[in-house]
Image 1 (tube, rainbow over the protein chains, first blue to last red):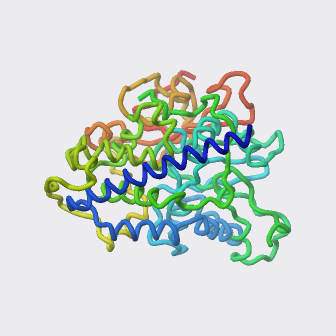
Image 2: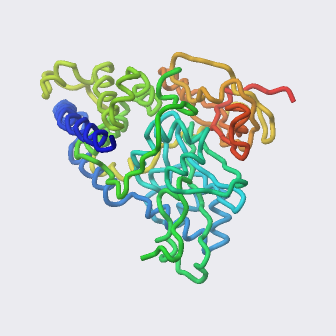
Image 3: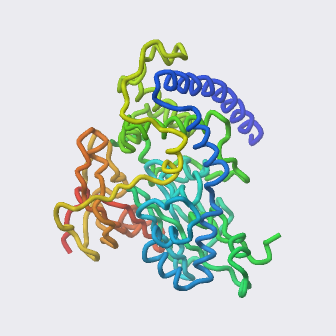
Length: 210
Length: 220
């Protein structure tokens, strides 16, 4: 069963790839010849998304918040301003909101209507975040979704799901793992996974760091 | 629009399947497609809300079957033709058959850094916010056939205003070419049992970002 499913998927993706490649090439050629777009600008945009923007930015923000209580307060107060002060990227978008996990509360981020995501600090969203299973179930079965990621929370932990239905964007500030006292920001940042900043996972534990 | 895109709370889509070590793009055309869409947005071809509406207007079977960037490509084809940037004959031919429309600006390599920041949608308010933090509000039972950001699962339900996020461009208006019509934006939080009934997780709360026209005062 599983094998057949995989095979079908590959087949579908394979045929879409060649068709989509041709269609997107046609779009680019026509829009460039008509003078609307500059292919070199597209190259630069793609390169930036592949090499500069990613979850390492969010991980630095989280690690800083774990080590600097004043920064953490500023982050909760105004995440755009606080993240901007770190100088990690050109400019942090408006209305970035950091939501803090505690022993009693777990936050999770979704966009049920499309794919809204704090991409300038986490990179482009993964396929699963944009998929129907996540978008449909995050709001009514977040514990089931977490189970799909291998995460189980205590039964009495409150769960808060933030549906990104406007131009506000959310990033989860996860709890600092135990056994990391005295760690540098740089080392702490290695524990901060993309998924834990969406609330679909937890940070790595101290002993998981290779 | 009560479309297939409004997925919150639906059943039957199965498990979430994370992909280990997922690449930023799974094929080169995905990156080209993202950048093409952004570049056309940057020249003012359409607003972000018009482009979201463009995805929502794909037929539901196409929406479900196409990959994420596949949808973006279909939307781009539809919108460049619908707005007269190119003809369907040109897309079919894979080359320009006529001159382009004159443009006031074009995205160059030097402009790329500013495309790496999300747009700014906060605006000056024309009137004070109607609701305050702690107010009980009902998400209206409204079903516009055009673009809206009020998800179906919240409509008709009572929540509490948790935060006022400022005054923002109103997607329901810009998506239909009605101008920015800025509106106050609130975080409204609902208990899961209010939204999904008695069998819902009692430890769960869900919030939406709701524009003022989506809300009415609830009787307490």
